[in-house]
Image (cartoon, rainbow, N blue to C red):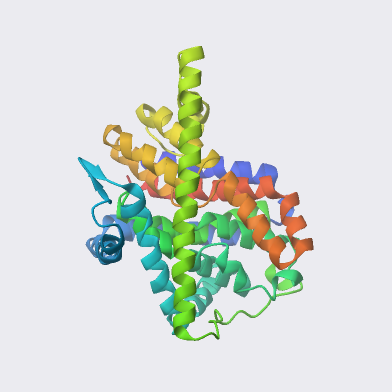
Length: 396
């Protein structure tokens, strides 16, 4: 039954892609099929083999250990404030570790460990997907560095990219998450789903681009060589300080977004409940429940999960993960797996603005190009998240 539902989910997602495709005659079915099969192998190995389960447990345990190390700095600065009776303060215990993880990313980038990994994994993905050197490189680097920082690694190529290449790299940026965020996500959802989603999202964005935005990289004109991520030339401690401050700014930005969005949703829920005896999130749940059902969510879960899917789209993944934490004990294992993996991406309205602004800062004309297809970009990134969730749902 899960396989049948999975096939229905894939047909639904690819059907939407076909309808909005910019070039239906040249959809890259061969590359799509190859990557979908590879995603299924990854999901099966990670979720249903002893070796895969041990690897996922090891990765999750490693990030939990990193969170404990990050607590050293948080305890020193905010000791006595991060815990409250019966719980903990979200900002200190979930967001502040981003500062420490960001510092580690900076160190690994400075000593060229990350450039080495990104270069060779990108080459491997290029061989598997046939999507081109730039696209494969970027799909890996965005999963490590996140956006908007990842755009800096190809800033010299961005002004020269075609509109189709630009769409693909922006979709990859919205469909992935940065390494600095993983530990925080694992505090909110099951770590194994976070890791699996990171792996699958690399391919999901490329698969969706094959149908929504098909092109042959070799015939597109420019295929820049991106052999490595360029580390900064500044002194080590200056670079480290920059990454630490960037991590802190990111944590504060996320906190501000959470305050605003959660307050807004609370206001809408109370207002709708008072006026219509139904909450705003309940309405969203009913509106998105058919989509949830079509990607394999069990019928008893589809309204609740539909509400969380909608919340992520209009706010961000942190708000949605918070809502998921409140109801996850009421969901079936399959429903929990699908929504957990769906949430691990940056596909929301706010990220469209971040991506457009990032590209505009590098090249204004390319920023205008991205702005023209911003809604199609959001649709493609959301479809990538749906695809990742559907693939995982097949194995539950």
